Length: 252
Image 1 (tube, rainbow, N blue to C red):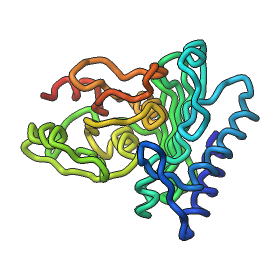
Image 2 (cartoon, rainbow, N blue to C red):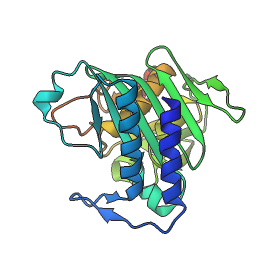
Image 3 (cartoon, helix red, strand yellow):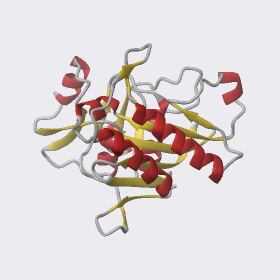
Image 4 (cartoon, rainbow, N blue to C red):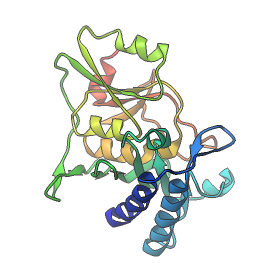
């Protein structure tokens, strides 16, 4: 699985290092040939590895909810998360691959090829970051708050809701980051929280959700004590906060 992600990452970097064209989908989100190349590599790799497990990918075919509802296990893939970061060439884009069981992720890989950062984990078991010498180091979310509070925020999406969330802290640092790396930085204890009070899709979060669960954290639906779930008829996620569950419960 890690090898599939690396091969897809190599293909993405070949495009990244050129003067590539940018296209736009119907919703005006950007698209490049790197998205398509990575999708094809990941789909072929997964088809060879687990031919009986279906794949739901952002760049794949649209699969009807009635068909998805019968799936017990499936792969949920975003072949290039953070296309805006890719287009702006700030290196903060990722490949997200998650194995889903019913409505929850059970395994996930997040690979940032330009940064050569690889995270992977199994929900409720353990999660890891591959460090410079190639070994896997176990990661854990922060379990205590110590000022200043470290908060991951999006480079591409700021809002009054985010500003209101931040205002409850007397001392804080904002770490601006793109793609699913924000959840990974919560997972490895680099930051305390990542509030996502705007739109995301299921393929944006599933892989990093598995990783943060393996690291002792959660993605909690904003305003509740419940984790977000997947394979809904509408694949848009609710607003959520990533972090240690007990720390999230202490927030306003």
